[in-house]
Length: 43
Image (cartoon, rainbow, N blue to C red; front, side):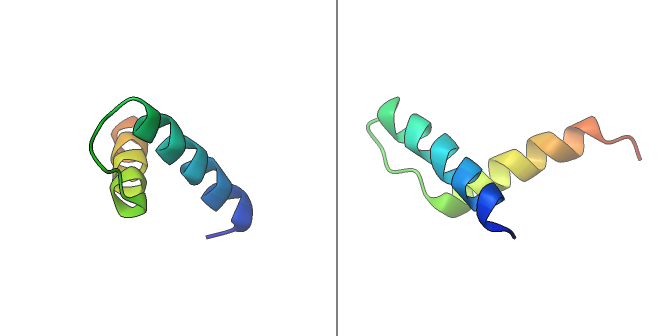
């Protein structure tokens, strides 16, 4: 994974942390983004 993608995921993580009182792990954010991305692909 390149640095640009990591920074984008960290930004998403930061926004999610601001909107919730629970912790938000990097792997949780990564799984959400991958899941949403896979939904857009037609197999």
